[in-house]
Length: 234
Image 1 (tube, one colour):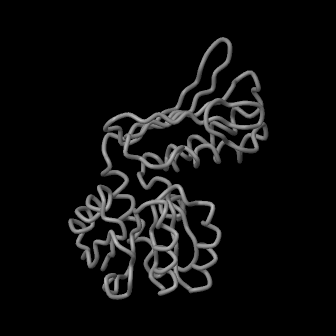
Image 2 (tube, rainbow, N blue to C red):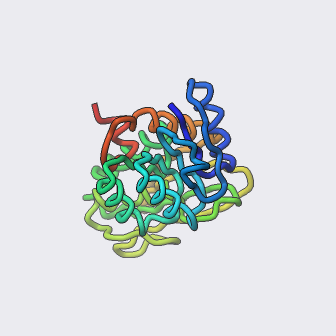
Image 3 (tube, rainbow, N blue to C red):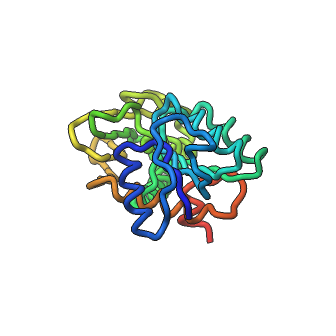
């Protein structure tokens, strides 16, 4: 494939290295606004930029029928509009709050555990995410996906918020520490014990490999997708 990297920071560079090793050609490495000239006619765009510019970057690509894989978080209030554009322009859009295989298995485990625990009100639920100090949004997109997985399976909750769980609002603690790629934990705590599930990323390579696999998978497809489609839909 010919791949345009829209957003060429740490993640973009790792994605470029992995894509090249898998036999693909990087035709653009952008930290500026995409245009038809600087995108250089790609088969797909992989967008890992900043929340402030993600919407406009994705919008331009979709309007020009370039499929987009997006891993930028912090802009999701505008995601329904982007999904509508993908359909209207007869192309494809795939958003992932996290592209790693391990995290997507963790998402499935989280939903299963939430369904198991929904009838045990003696357990209070709390989420925690830890990331590097350069991460610009909080809570992380991965933590939000985890929270939504619990909300969709446990009728006790109808929303999430930062800090501590209270009533029907599921709490997320966000911690920023140097050189932490990403750690996510879900706690179920009662007066007598605690159940914890946890995912720890050792580096960014797992995220990058998943993004390239998603780009390979989306070729020829139309509509809106997630990593669940890539990994689990047969």
